[in-house]
Image (tube, rainbow over the protein chains, first blue to last red):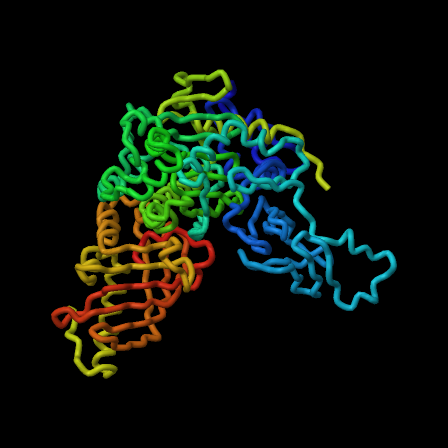
Length: 437
Length: 166
């Protein structure tokens, strides 16, 4: 295997193409994938605009006319609930002369009106109002001038995903084995539902989106990056074993979906609610009672021991224990991380604590994530240096257990999750471009 | 260091005492004198709050910072380890405080002020600004902070790391 690759293959522009099967190898990845403009644009096209991405949660748009605007790749998308209670997603662009329809992050509207000439659209996207219509010719067809829907918009467990591409893969296929991770999160609610209504922290981080993805499922950095927190706040840290010998497993579910299964640690200790903090003085009697009433004593206990998932769903959604994070790529060296607490329906006692834990640990001032952001930025700056060309991802590569369904299991500090991400990345990026209308 | 608070409400001398207190607090923050800044706070119940919007409700919403007294102490302990990566190196900051308004409310002074803060770190410069609301108490003739709320002008937009003391 050649140890270097000519600089000429880095960041090839549209006339050439980047050979992803060369740049992504088992156990090493080429540094230019984090820094190249051309790679970034191809990722937006093939991953974020060509496949399924998380866009919003049903609880953010509970009533007809509620909407949020979100970026999907380079595209601004309006996600709204229509009169029938369905979720629809439209490109945020007036079919008349192209103005942005919704300039707010969220709101509620009976209909959508363009701020430029006042064209008005029903919640299902139909054009229903054109000021002074008499001057339009006979050929003017209202029916073709509604808001443009994205190719597909579907939800699983309350999480709304869109696909702007015409790929054949269903959301069910895309989520694959990772559906069980969403199920595990919902399983902690006595009603089987969560809501994401605690507000989104918006954290601007000068690093590539893939660095944030890889860090979310990295069990190897904690003692170094979070040493200051471990040293200064005993009550904040949960009861998990962070040593090399930890029973915690990292898992690669396939399709780029990966997790750190802290449940394997909690199950070994066999104590409920360790995920809410070992030293917590809260006993959450109401919550435990509601779980027991819903699921019976032994099943409720199983769920309360197991706790929430700590995972990344390809390409942008993190089920980060009692938080949800999604990553918005801005450019090769810039991203925004959106963070909100997971509020469990039917568990208001616990939710109050979850709000406070989320804001303490996460976001730009958080005891944990501010330090992760700093390291992500330092990694981006490091990768701008040309040598050495490759990043090393072989940790634990010989100790992976490969299951029958193709999933791989390894130790807490192994880079199995990162390798799982890159394996799927290579498959998606090496495929030919999908033609879109 | 901290001047006694004169009794007459709204008098020039009260305003001068409050101004001097805010300038002292600003300097301790800018110079990362963590224990001295913490000593400006009451020892009992307190709140250091940076919401994500000017009308954020902490009962239902998260905030960028929402420290009670215990968490504030924890924040200072973490910074004081010298190993908080997000402040290694420390941000170089200087802040200007202006538009100070003082109201006496029972035993408390309610102080609002505007600030502009320039942060320099690792080759880039960030400009921060906003309105700060202090609830101060007069404790043994010295001012102490019971509550500090910082309404960033960009609190509804995305913000970079905010690991220094705002």
